[in-house]
Length: 131
Image (cartoon, rainbow, N blue to C red; front, side):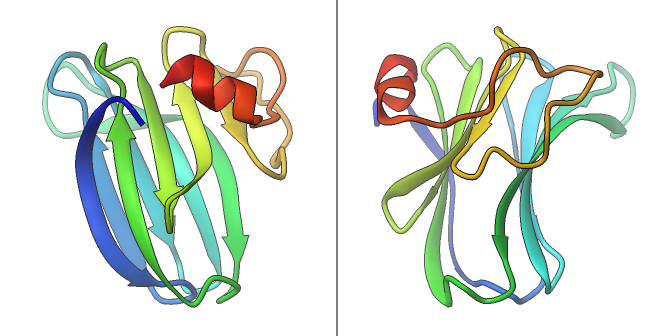
């Protein structure tokens, strides 16, 4: 991928994890969370004042411990408007903040009315076009 590696961690799927990455160029950020049962990737928008944020979108990544020990990377595009979640070298989700799109492999959950536009399907063509 052509972009900035902003977070990297070895995690165990099914164990509590909270990994955040914020763009240094705008108010957007992402959070990966594993609550011990499910892994989700969130698009967030930070408040202009303070440390608060609102969730724009959420993408399901996995259930339980289906991945076991894995290497997690959060990669931002060079324009700081796209962000990918990469597990063991494979892109599992992308947020495109300019297009207000969230894309993942299993297309779950369904589109929300707050932010997401278009479809959810993460394809190789989409990955190549964004990075």
